[in-house]
Length: 67
Image (cartoon, rainbow, N blue to C red; front, side):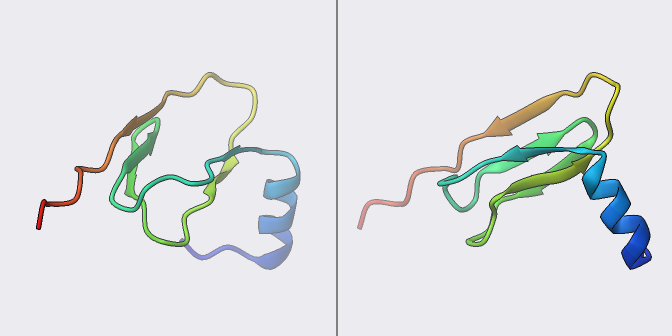
């Protein structure tokens, strides 16, 4: 989704964020109807619309295989 710089800045300033530090790579994280698989640089979710309830969910990454 392309967004003008000024519109993006205004949206960030009036929206919410979820900070998720230390989440293992491969974990599935979701908000409402969106789902992401966490990569090595994941820090959280931003630009969450205000004035409404949201559903935040996750599924832990599978453990690494035994070698």
